[in-house]
Amino acid sequence: MNDASKADIRQVTEAPTPTPDTLERVRRHRRHTLELLTVCAVGLVPWTVLLAVTLPSAYEVHQWRTTWVGFDVLLVLAMAATALLGWRRHRAVIVAAVSSAALLICDAWFDVSLAIGTADVWSAAALAVFAELPLAFYLIHRVLGMISLAQWPSAATATGVDE
Image 1 (tube, rainbow, N blue to C red):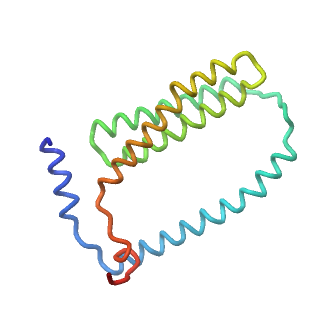
Image 2 (image 1 turned 180 degrees about the vertical axis):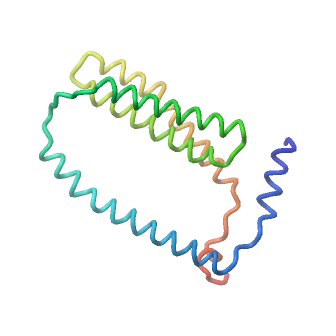
Image 3 (image 1 turned 120 degrees about the vertical axis):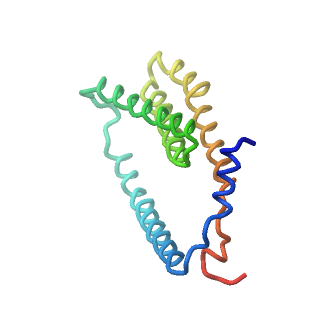
């Protein structure tokens, strides 16, 4: 273990205990975030059904090149941020890695689903199966490993219940 890793571990283990006000604020923000996400998830169900019923199966697209190049630029920026933050050992690497993984999964989905019915479907599927999805799952696996190393308050501490 190098000195930087030891310093990181010391910093995490020597973190101050949060005050009751801080814990209450964190609980309130957590509750509001979860309520918002629940409403969004429930609201997306009828929206998705409506799209499934009303969207045309084919659509002529303008700015196709701009859309795909823009998406790939976003993917490059996410991967570059992940690499840079990883090299700097910054904890924000977790956010960048999850963003990169999500973009890779979206890229695989769009490449394959938009190529269905064409000769390009096989190359799109191969790229998805052998490059995009494995890299996305590798990043997710690494993020889960980093999160498991973090020191988290116990559920009792987080909810204010004595153990």
